[in-house]
Length: 122
Picture (spheres, rainbow, N blue to C red):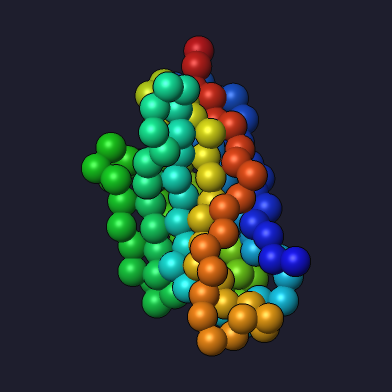
């Protein structure tokens, strides 16, 4: 059973920092593109940052210069370092990954984590 498990959310004051982690577990052959998305109340889910298996990154304009995505291919994990947090960053953050498992080694499947709440408030 392949799944993504997130951790690291919480409550932080404006200007503070948080680090989100996401680990893929199960019989994984390879992790392709991994990323973070978020959904605020009453809004659509949006892409925050993505990273390819080769390390290429892409960020939403709203987080450029404040957030950094990274990954550890050996651990099939992806991280999101969030600095200079603003109240508008408040949302549920979801990990996403295209994973190739040993049960479907010829193609990848897209997986979502369960989400972790990030609240930025004084």
